[in-house]
Structure formats: C-alpha cells, structure tokens
Length: 129
Image (cartoon, rainbow, N blue to C red; front, side, top):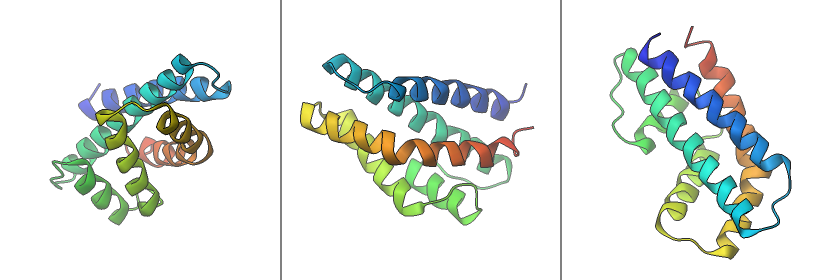
C-alpha cells in the first residue's frame, strides 16, 4: 500500500466517524466536543492526503492554505471559499474552546462541511487507486 493509499484509507475511516458523530443531534458538551474532534481529524487528514497527492504530481504544498489552493486549481476540491471557512473554523478550534463557538461550529459541520468533505473524498478516491 502506498503512502497516498494509506492516508486516503485513514481519511475515509475518520470521515465515517464524523458522519456517525453528526447523525445524532448533540445534547451534552461532550457530544459537541466529539464532533469537533472528529472534524479536526478529517480536516487534518484531508489536507495531508491532498498534499501527498499533489507532491506525487510534482507540486509542493507545505501548508494547508497552499494545499487547498493547489487542489482547487486542479479540480480536486470544490468550493474554494468554503474551504477558507473550514480552515478558519479549524484554526478557531485549536486555540480556544467556547460552548457558543462549539454549538455554532457543529451546526456548520453538519449543514455544510460534511458535504464538502464527502465531495472531496469522492474526487480524491479515483486518484488513489
């Protein structure tokens, strides 16, 4: 199994975990925390998988923002503006924990980000075989 295939496999697994986490509406603080942690895993694995894929095609992308921009240029992801929002959300989750932010972010994850992750995984899947 190549590095790209292993990374993609980890991404798919983490994404399934996130889908399970958002399938039940959050009630307690730990529910929100679990969704946010799953989101963080999927985000990290998405940009790292895209980075590996781009590098296998000779494109250097050392940081998430560059990776997403390059992936967008090559039609590996959709919604470049949404990815900027996702990056901002990820930055917020890594620097603070606020219950109002958690509630708001979980709503965004459920209503918007899940779809973008899913579309990205489908596009990248064909590149990983």
